[in-house]
Image 1 (cartoon, rainbow, N blue to C red):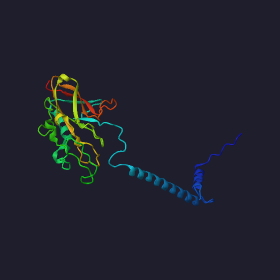
Image 2 (spheres, helix red, strand yellow):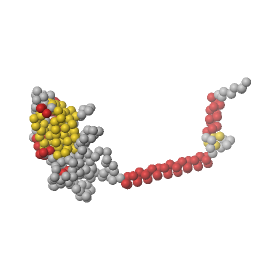
Image 3 (tube, rainbow, N blue to C red):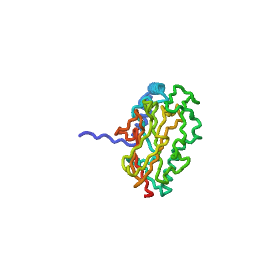
Image 4 (cartoon, one colour):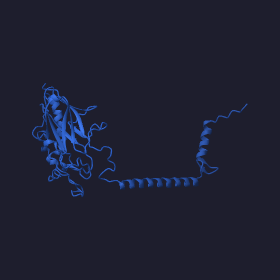
Length: 292
């Protein structure tokens, strides 16, 4: 019959652990002599110094090769996205619903547009260039603006006409002619059109509820986005850049509900990408719950 191993007491276990930590007979600390601990410590110190140096060198080379003014890869979206304000985005699509008979309802819409247009006030554009040549791309090869930046063309809020909020702070939401603001997102170095004979402009079509839309007006005239606002050189190069805007005023009648699609028309802007619903265009539903 095998002999059972003697069970060690707590005191004996503590004594064994103490001997492991420091063995006076062999002069070892946790199984190694002090001399070996010095060698091991020096080895790992040198190892981590080398690893840290290699990592720092890799980061330095990466940062040295990056262009601070433009990303290396811009192929995720070939055409810019298009947005509409007021930006009341639902779970699946944009739904702009208001009640022209309820001040709290239309006041929410007008406040949203006033906030969005705040950077477009004249006193906010003192650093912008007011002498841009209209109808041509604003090509800048050098940093001629202060603080090693490039110039940005001003966009006077008055260009939005009755949708500027300068004369009507309600933006038409207290009646049946609400204003919408269309903005195209920025892509560095993007030229929307290679055809100098055609204008870059916004065009809106009624997808459903045509009988409820009497007319659509555009500001600036014909919904034009002037070429002088392109190309965009990035936030570091153009810290005062303002996107060109187009205001769309819709005259609602009948049931005062319609689904519209507004797209930026240019030969280099696509809008039929099923996987990118906001590429080159934006679909939204406009509904007035009042004055039926």
